[in-house]
Amino acid sequence: MRDNKRLGGIGEKVAIEYLKKQGYHIIETNFKCKQGEIDIIAADDDIIVFIEVKTRSSDVYGQPSEAVNYYKQRKIVQVALTYLAKRNLFNWMSRFDVVEVIMEQTDKIANINLIKNAFEYSGKYGY
Image (cartoon, rainbow, N blue to C red; front, side, top):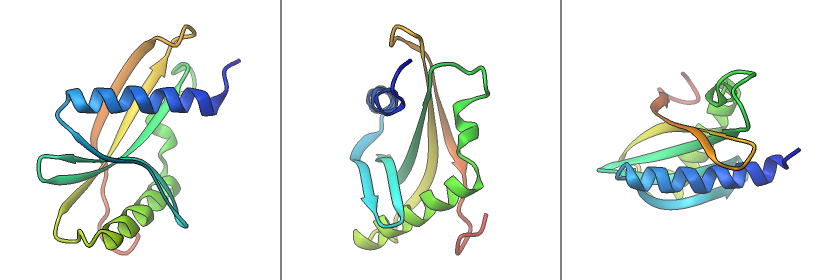
C-alpha cells in the first residue's frame, strides 16, 4: 500500500507540470497560514488561481474532486483571502480550480483532469 502523503506529493508535481503546459504561471506552492494550506497558487492570464490538487490511486470510490466539499472549500477561501491580504492583491480577479490526478499502481498517470472555476466565493464565507 502506498503512503498517502507520498501519493499526494507525486500528484502535486504532476499537476504543476500539467498546469504549466496549459499556460499557467506557477507563483507559489504549498502556501501555509494559520487557516490552512493551498496546494498551488498560479496566474492564468490576469487571474490569480487557487488550486487544490486531489490525487487518488483509483476512482472506485468516486472522483477525487468530490473530496473538495463545502468545508474544504470554505477553508481554501479563508487561506486565499489571507494570501490576497498579505500580498495586497485585492484588485486582482481570482478563481478556484481543482486538479484531479488518478495514478496507476506503477505510479503512472492514469488520468488528469483540470476543473476550472470548480467553486465560487460570493462574500464572507458565503457560497
